Length: 135
Ligand SMILES: CC(C)(COP(=O)(O)OP(=O)(O)OC[C@H]1O[C@@H](n2cnc3c(N)ncnc32)[C@H](O)[C@@H]1OP(=O)(O)O)[C@@H](O)C(=O)NCCC(=O)NCCS
Image 1 (spheres, rainbow, N blue to C red):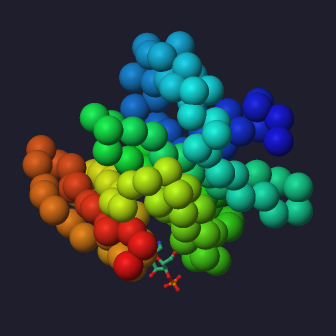
Image 2 (cartoon, helix red, strand yellow; image 1 turned 180 degrees about the vertical axis):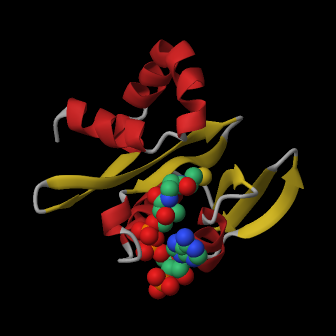
Image 3 (cartoon, helix red, strand yellow; image 1 turned 90 degrees about the vertical axis):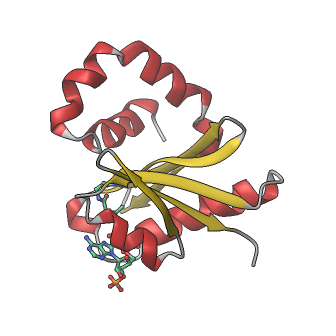
């Protein structure tokens, strides 16, 4: 997988309203992506990258930082497979819980509930979820 292709799918996953914010911290964001390449999974269909997920530690707690599937490849189980990969790696790294957050308006929350995540808190327009792993 070429890094430029990966970067393209990651950029595609950005909320357009937040793109200006991404631009203003591009160097930091790219640094974080590069640091987490070994915690990142890319779904490839017919040689095309159609989605990605990656996790990292936030205050020593594993968090799914990004999960994205391109429009034309949605509702085929790809995000579920990408999340499984992250969760297996988190478990293998010695952690038994994963967390994530999403804006309260984002329909992705229904996918997370379906994948076994439980909503723990909603604050300032964001919902926070956790899942116990290895059960
Ligand atoms: C959320 C997202 C990653 C889901 O990807 P996906 O590959 O379509 O997900 P899956 O096919 O694995 O879905 C598994 C289940 O989750 C639920 N689900 C998925 N997307 C859903 C949606 N938009 N609304 C309601 N339920 C949904 C369904 O129950 C689905 O099973 P089903 O298709 O058999 O009914 C994708 O819609 C996406 O990339 N969204 C934009 C990026 C984003 O918002 N990411 C999260 C930021 S925190």
